[in-house]
Image (cartoon, rainbow, N blue to C red; front, side):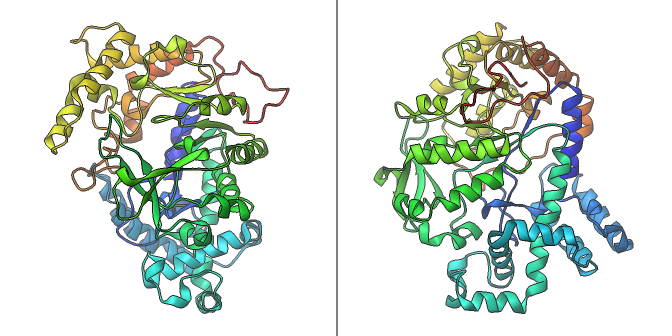
Length: 501
């Protein structure tokens, strides 16, 4: 939860870290089953109450034995490594609803409601409707399917206390997130889209192509292509709306942030649309106005004082990286995909050994990641697996029988030699975890996004390997703890050589 994030940030800051990169914390539908993927949110503008530390909510102590009972049940869930989101959701909802029943509105809460206005009200109305009619707004009674309908306001008036509850949850999340990010800059992650059944799709349905979804064309990594199930914005409708959905989304994502990673940043230029019900082989690219979209990102970056990273993995058309560089948006360099040594990576980049969708260093080195894929019937390209292993051998300079901890330390030492503005290390690598967080193209075959780190925060804080990785990266020439990379606009007083570890 966000109190754990505060503790994690304090630990990272003590080790010399200059930032912390998070997966998306966005809201999902307020029911069960809880959506496990952080890249399939109901809303990209609001946060998931599952991350609240209940005990720190004002008025929690008044619950007495009820809070103790719920907290004990929650602590028992920590005995299993697979995260039971549904159980966590139920326990926290009961506790938070009980706190809310004993809570009167406060001036600070009213100021928060005023600041966030209609978008917050609309989101809370969606949540209240979803609790009664299910998460898919298309299946609601017809009079509730458009947020502008008078019936929606009538429903909200009749359930005013519950609508306020969902707004109060967002206020609590905002306060706890602010506290968690006070000491160390946090880099938030913005998914490429949102659940077509969710709050954002309900609010912005007039700007969406409901008959299509976003994905990726067939390539060497996936011969069938990918359908992500996310509805795309229609370019001319988004423009006619003054880009309000995009502006609101980016502004929300940069709140309490030192930086923002934009997933699939190529979506600012074009998106691969797939007609709903057909395969990716029937899809096509649809272009947007990158000059206008990049200008919006630059303005919001400057307003927030946050730098921007564009995740540019996969198919990138010519000219994209040049335009990103012109706007001072960092590109993304991942060891597994790079033929050049780290010393030749571009300066305006964020570098990582791996991502949540790719093997951990331990999983690749030991072969356990390959075995896990084969065990569930996947047939990964052996050429690609061997290519990644060879790159790891080359940058570490270690033999195939070297112990995993030495390989991990050597890999990050090599990444530390890059001129990149930002170098990131994963918690999985710090604990020598062999399982990756997510296995693309799988759903029920494995618990994606639901495997907790072994040992908890105590294991991280006492990990010799984590300390070694931090020491290696702290040795970077000119590395500056806590320094922020310049915001996206190219302004004159930017310290161009600042780097963050």
